[in-house]
Image (cartoon, rainbow, N blue to C red):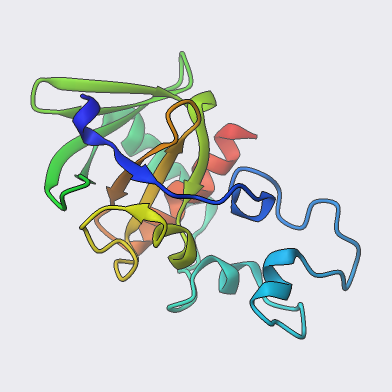
Length: 176
């Protein structure tokens, strides 16, 4: 199922690593390199504002995240966006026994251990670095799994922004 991945041109920086805690190691009032680069004078943006530049991410509850977790355990429909822009209807499944995600498309299955996910790209700035003809940047329901070994990305499109936000929050929790 190697054809399911897209390439990533992601810069190596701590701010791009979604799996790390936000503001780790910063003192009060100290700005990250990312905030300084963007010209943010206040340094007081909320995490939800940083998460989505097109608008604030929907507020999700623990019950919403648990509901998505249950659906992932059973297998939920997502679109995988290929490098040429093709959309594949697939099933995304989380396996608790070995802490892995599997993506099933027709008769092919790709298993991705959570430990192999370097970063979960989900903001506009992060998604514009994914090399694909699919329009990830303007689609607020998309994320991309940036893989550790190959550096490739697997762009996923959820049914809605709420599912995407729950997936981002759930993956942070599972990787912690």
